[in-house]
Image 1 (tube, rainbow, N blue to C red):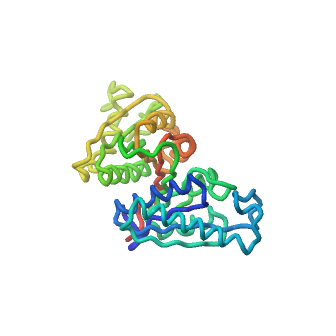
Image 2: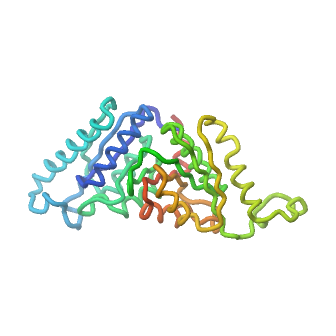
Image 3: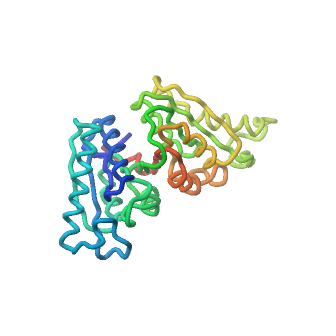
Length: 295
């Protein structure tokens, strides 16, 4: 993955159990990638017009930073238990979580968040915002955390899903597991979108066309990761539902931020939104521009 030189894996915390699970996932990711870990808490109270988390509801403005720092201390302890050799720093930043984390993503290797938190400080809309606006890949921690199972990538033949496929292969290599490359199709006739002359298409079935899309997407990319076993899946159906089914077996699902229109749904679009709220394992959303940064 092309990254900013010296970039850290960044994790957002708010003191909730889910954000602490995100810390553990981020620490493991930093260890695999030989990157530092940066733990960030965004403090936007009292401007934030939402309920405060337990322990802060009765706090004075002066006490809030103290509690926030306690969250960071706990996060450092959790990270150290998972990856004791990873250099770790903390930051207490002022502003709404979505804005703060979007800003820090500009120099991050990867951004890790829980799918929701407490008191609105890290909740679903923040994860959705980051998946659409982050300058780096976003890993949303939800569902079951598994140490086994494949990495599953949604592939639709678009440039954005190619970026997601590349990162999924990289993740599978780092984790020492296999990749499931899933291409879902809805039965839409692809011929009008195909550059191949009609005469050469002949009577090729819809499924044969979709098999070709997946084969072309994997060509070259899989060769760069020869030690990663790849299982190809071409299935008729909705990508979000099919990837959701695979999430019950996977340790990670990877998608682009959106894909090729009506052919397989918008990968964030409907597919990405579905997964970050419904998947039974962590989901990584890869934004295309984030893959082209110069390190």
